[in-house]
Length: 192
Image 1: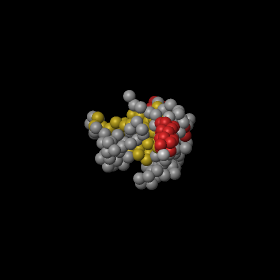
Image 2: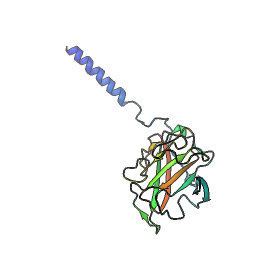
Image 3: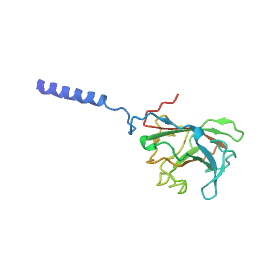
Image 4: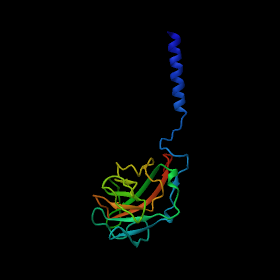
């Protein structure tokens, strides 16, 4: 009986050591270093009627104050963007401002974002979930319960690089939203 118990303990310890020595990256994908998007390579525009690219903005922030929920602008990614299939997750950060341009503390129900795969397709997708042309939809960006703004980020669902990203005021609409970061990674990103 002691021999059986000893063998069981040895097998259990061997299994535990095997699991402990395994890969700790639960985000999947390769061991690629995080890709921190150079925001200077991006442009932004107002959203014109019929979800078309409107007037170009001078930065990655709306120039006219948002006055109601669902006001938005679009961030445009360059044609030869990063191969996002190497990365499973994305972290997106924003800053929000009141109507006077003063920074305000981000909270839930202020900002949401969604990737747009084809700029000539549907920019909105299903109301709350990803769709064929909107592989990522993230709510509460910057808020307490938001996940996309945390180091771990969320799965982006893209097999090819998106052509754009809608940045949208949600129900508790801030007057101004500024995109401050996009990082593609495999759960291996740590902010400073």
